[in-house]
Image 1: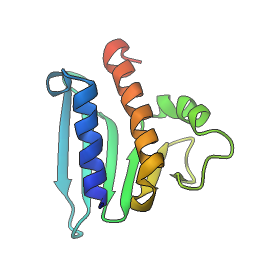
Image 2: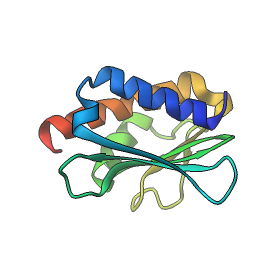
Image 3: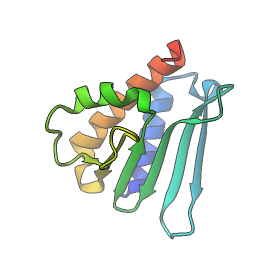
Image 4: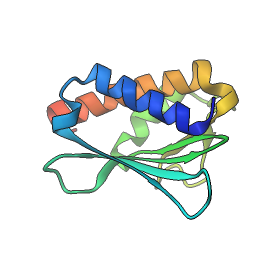
Length: 128
């Protein structure tokens, strides 16, 4: 499995869990100048235009970047200390992002995807 396959799986799960995703969310997936590296975003349709979620998709894994407002919920979910399979950036407080390697797809990426979908559903339903 590659990082792109991981992300495509996540996007498919998101659309399965949120049947109205195509109407409520705008998806983008664009290549960068580096071969095999993509930037993906998920934004609320009719929202500020700012993505709710950004993803850096590389052959070796996926890094999801989240709104700062989700930082505490994600910190609580990750636990202390978080598993080493979740690669956090040093500026976690100002820009929460979690990277997961292809080798850690199950159960780490699948768990992260589940929590992310839960937060996206809440964001769509309540705006929080």
